[in-house]
Amino acid sequence: MRACDTPLLRKFWYCVARSGDVQDKPFGTRLLGEAVALWRDGQGLVRAVQDRCPHRTAKLSLGQVNNGNLVCPYHGWTFNGDGHCIRVPQVVQDRPTPFGVNAYRCTERYGYVWVALEEPLFDIPEIAELATQGWRQVHEFHEVWRTSALRIIENAFDPAHISFVHRNTFGTDDPRIEPFTLDERPDGFVFRNDFRVTNAEHMKSALAMDEDETTRATRNRFHLPFSRVGHIHYPNGLVHILCSFLTPIDDVHTRFTQFVVRNDREEDVPAEVVVAYDREVTDEDRAVLESTDPEVPLDRSEGVELHMAADRAGLTMRRMLRDLSVAQATPAG
Ligand code: FES
Ligand SMILES: [Fe+2]
Image (cartoon, rainbow, N blue to C red; front, side, top):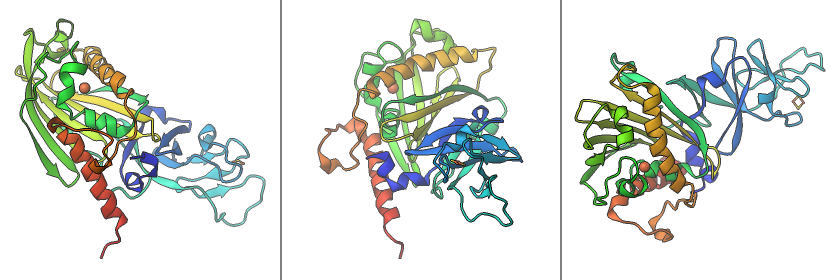
């Protein structure tokens, strides 16, 4: 699957920036091969338009914000939050111009800016704990990886890589797969499995646990197309919820955004210790994922990859994406 050539992928919300990236200046980002300019309008709401001026193609994100509108850096043409050109400074206008740039749906949630290029099929994944007393959010990563979003999200549901990729952190040396269940939902699936993990000496403080081994009881929720909200329950009562959102920048680059939600306090485990644990684990994944072919075949009959039973979650993602692409391309009725 090439992300930029898959029309289905335009119909989802993606995390494109941190809220703090968009303050009093415009901010440029990329989504599915399209350059997108973000800025805050007069009400403080983030707006998103095509980052390409219709006059001489300059990047609008290099311009300025004036009265909540976006001003092109080249000749000052000015665009409102709906993308309409409302001012050409060189021309005395007595009526609105009939032209503009594409505007996209844009919202903020969990401290990030989200954009959908077309009417989204599903809402942004719900994280109920964030609205509940006793839980905290720890921001971890917002960075660009050189591989495709599907490779990264498949890996988040791949029990077979742990004793190899993570042998220096939480993986045990037993490569056998514990039983798992996978329950499909219209917008993804729930993957559950419980497994033994190593509690490495240098990582014990992040889990507030002294044992050399422990157990993870996981409920890993996949949301189409490339998101995961994964609950990890430890025997000491700690719940560590991994919230990972993958944004295809183009066919071979992906923005990896991750934060965690936990039921402990900063006094128990400082945020920097939480981040350091996941940094080490995530860098292990990244090293191998960036060595893979970014192009992932959606159809098993293409025969360019071999599979095993432990690949079921990734294969289910591929089938769901393929079926939804066909359904969306087929006119209703
Ligand atoms: S290129 Fe934007 S106003 Fe000329
Ligand atoms: Fe991993």
